[in-house]
Length: 78
Image 1 (cartoon, rainbow, N blue to C red):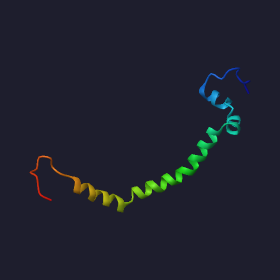
Image 2: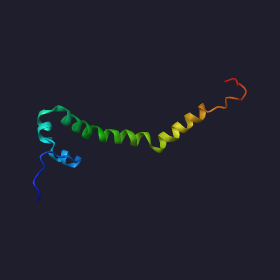
Image 3: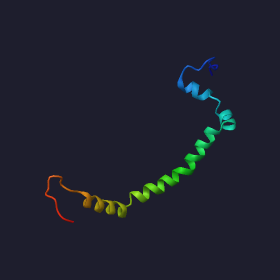
Image 4: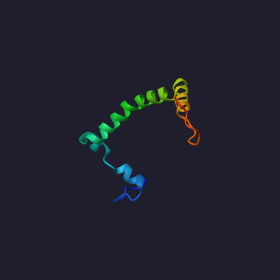
């Protein structure tokens, strides 16, 4: 096994030697970021599933069909 370099020049070496445990214990950013991802991913999945449901897509297709018009067509009374 080769000895550890005095300074890690590669990105992998820098990633390995980074003090992750210290930042997790003493800094709030890494912990809160990880917790927010864990909490929000299921929520985003549910929202995406609801938005892309066939019923919702059909409803919005109807709404867009009502809005569709030809700008060169003659004006009609509503």
